[in-house]
Figure (cartoon, rainbow, N blue to C red):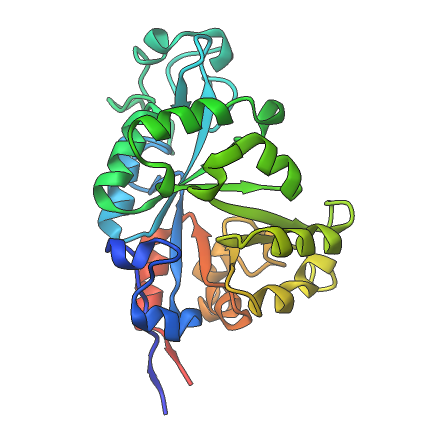
Length: 297
């Protein structure tokens, strides 16, 4: 008998934080799908802008993905590229300009049109996700061997938002422990599972033995990859299986594009059937609509 797939989009603090899920989520964790919006909802506002983040929250996502980098004066701002040229009316490397200079720039939308949106600071985004009880997934944190991470953690402690942070890293457990120190107990870590990680099976087992990761992010361009074959191992644990439907090369082709141009069951549905319960997307409203109407046996 068919019944609606229950989607718990975690705008409620009792459901959003790992370790304090509602009773129903504890009973049926595989029916809880967390949606991550890639660079906010950049379909309606410039990528990585506060407007894009607010739009994603209004849509109902549980996670906002963004990219954090350092300015010349070691201030954390949110920008995907290492340079200003593509997304702003500035030019050159972000690392060569100060925060004051960054804040004088304006962001371009997906069509290249200049808007009145500015490059956000990490502080602004942390206060936003804290207010709305959602997660902030920070990409680019491993650039230059993770030089930005101490600055991120210090700022998150200052605004009491460590528990809202998600870090996706392809580092072994011991390196992560050394970098995060005591803060490791308060943030959400998602180790990457990809065939380019040396000793992949041992790496995964070490993470499972020494920690209980919030999720593992899978990357596989083929179902023959060792990374995909490790999926059943993760599904036997409390950790979630996380996938970025933004990339065909991370999903063996079962991505956003397939979902929108062919059939969502062939893309997003296929991922859910395999056990993925965290999905990153460029199209949060479309994915959330699909989840709200999807039926399963």
